[in-house]
Picture 1 (cartoon, rainbow, N blue to C red):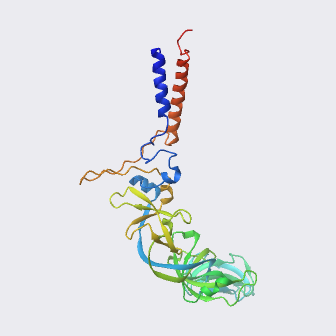
Picture 2: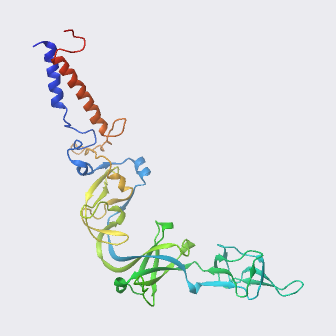
Picture 3: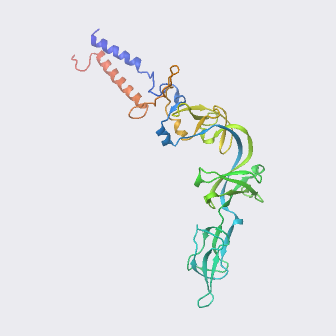
Length: 369
């Protein structure tokens, strides 16, 4: 056999025997495609301090606490009729001065508007109307120069320090609601805040069209962030369970029967283990963890969705009593994606295969017949 053909056969055999993906790129415990996406997503994953800040990563401790059963209904924020008032004119006339505007907080007795009477006089009689209670001007119906009729509405004022969250409970759930129940109220404008309230009363009758009963919840409005007519979600606490190991609901990812959390390691805060968990009771805040997490462990509650797509890293090696070095973050090609490795290997293999076949046929480049 000619030397050049022997060299070509040897190279071709080596390529054909070595093109299988026997090892993944650094940071993976197995080659792509050998365990599927699910196995490749198992922890631990490495997240640097800078990456944690960029992701907004936040953790919370798994702890023993009561888990409540809640009934969630949709509603809106309303002003309390007992803490609201309308300012109207006792005479027919024309608005000659506005002394307050919409959104302004006023005190009881503070002048709001002046109306000049249509009665003949020089000058015509003028009447000033004051705020009947302390609160916020939530509506103004007139401007300077407007004609007003007798008993015409001028202003509406409401005390916003306490408001009502009004929801509707369907007929089949009415038996779970009672006066005095604790309620957690949320509004889209402040999605990260929870406003505490109590069921004050139930409606007198069901709506015949929707078969639902109104529920009135008194809500403390510290800072007066809530405003009338805001959409709201009401979580009525209907039952309180015994102590259970629980984590915030946002910590649990996955679908029913395939739930998991990311647990931060105590000895290496940059490593996060993906743990399959068995869940139990849940409410609008917490989820009971039956299996998979121990009390005191810290689980990721914000930024955890992105962690499931990070590549896993090799476990740090230990030697006797020496302290183990933390696992290095996975390395990738300049392109930043694992499929680049397959493209490079495939291209090189095809080129070598074509060259080998040409040599075997005696038609290598530069050779004459």
